[in-house]
Length: 220
Ligand code: DX5
Ligand code: ZN
Image (cartoon, rainbow, N blue to C red; front, side):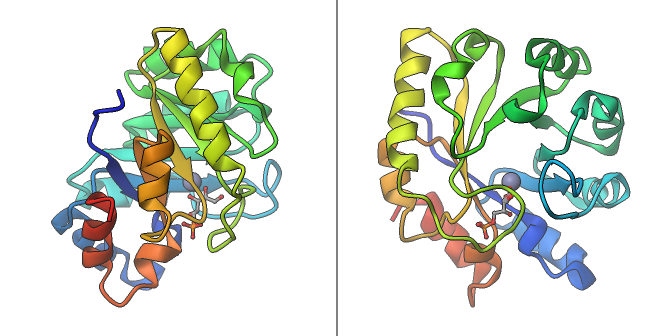
């Protein structure tokens, strides 16, 4: 897995919602690999973003897989709806799922790839008994809820720990990192074991988002 080329997943949370089609086209044209779509319910996280109808519209235009990050309580209530709206990868939070194993099976039975996200304080070892069942581990490098926050440095250590757990378990999950990711820390994150880099503000606030994506893709 260490030799897997790095994937870039721009987070549309930082896009211009009045010009969403243009930003979707930019990601389509760019070297990015996935669309990262952040759904917040105002309960699991202290913010509300966008939901099913917006994702269904993005899906009509997107030419790359849609990676939906659910920051919501009881995500099993909506898994089928997100599949219909166009999610290819559906990620739920460990902290929101007392029946995580069941949630993972539900997502996979709906034909999606299953991801599990960990808040910054949640130890990676808690995934030991499901790591072989999941396609993506999303390591939060900020507290979820908002774009534009400062990267938490402890994440580098966490990435090496999850990489070790994956190796020891003979698992195949991709490791995705989300929050405060930028061209400045991309290379070090890849070095620490990340396979998928999510970035919102670093891409959409840059003068040339397509170029920023290319720079991150090159790990430079
Ligand atoms: C935060 C979201 C992120 C967010 C990242 O809760 O999960 O995907 O869009 O934004 P930046 O890259 O600006 O930290
Ligand atoms: Zn996210």
